[in-house]
Image (cartoon, rainbow, N blue to C red; front, side):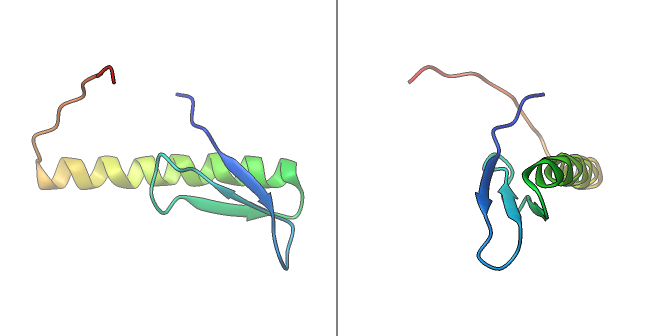
Length: 68
C-alpha cells in the first residue's frame, strides 16, 4: 500500500515523520533517510496492532470508495 508521510526537521533532534492516514503513527530519525525507514516500521506496527484489535473485537467492517 501507499501512504503519504509528512517529514519535518525536528526542533531538538533530526527528523520527525508522521503518517496522517493512521492516527498516532509517528517516528523519527537522525537523518531523513533514517526517519523514512523508521516510519515504514511504525506503519507496519500500527497496521499489525489495528488488525489484532479488529480480529479480537469482531467488529463489522466495510471498505467503500466515494466521490466527493
